[in-house]
Each structure stands twice: as C-alpha cells, then as structure tokens.
Length: 147
Image 1 (tube, rainbow, N blue to C red):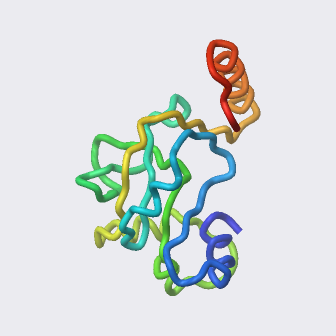
Image 2: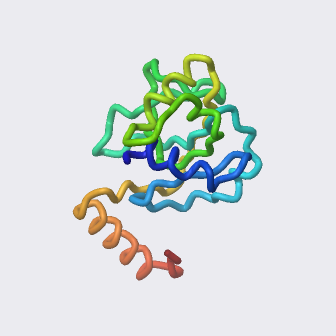
C-alpha cells in the first residue's frame, strides 16, 4: 500500500489526535517520548544529517518548518507525527506519503526538528550487517546497548 496508503487504511484505528509513525527499517537512539511535547501542524518530521547512501537529503529545515526547496538539505529519518487531516481527500489503495507532505509544506503546515544522534537506515542487508558490526564493537568497548 506504500506508506501513505498504509497509514490511510489505519486511520480509523488511530483516533482523533496526532499519531506517531516510525519506519520499520531504522535503528536509532531517538527518544520517542519527546514527541508527546511537540505541537503538530499537519505533520512533524524528525530529520537527520545525510547518510553516505543518501548525500543529497530530502528536505530543508527552516526555523522549525520543513520545506522541499533549499540548499542545506537533511534526510527524513522515518519518524513522524501526523494528523489525520493530512490525508483529507485521499482514497484507499496504494499511494506515497511524500506528495502529501510536500503539499502541506507549501502552506507551512509541516514542522520539524533535527536529530543529531545515532540513526541508521537498515533498509538493505549490507547496512543491517554494518550496524550489527558497529553495535558489537561498541558493546565490547563499553556498556551494553539495548535493542
């Protein structure tokens, strides 16, 4: 269903308030509890510095608002808070989330923050293996890492 279609299908189960969506192929030390304190327009995105496999990034963070244009781009982490109103006018089936976000960005209804901490996109077997190796090395060098 793609991300947008999957969220749209789940909307009846998510209630009236804002809700958090986290991609299943990331690993991070981001503190999710802080998202309960974030005022949400139509969406709030957590952005991270661009990883080597995505050097051009996705969006620009400008004074707490996320834009689609500009020079200093960051990568969308896969962590977001959304309101069901973002999906107004959508119909069932497969569709991407990004076009809805870009439309809301035009009216400055997408806020964001930069997370400078540990975050990894583990969407390929190679990146998962690299993270596993990094965590094992980190574990042997210090306190245990809880997954």
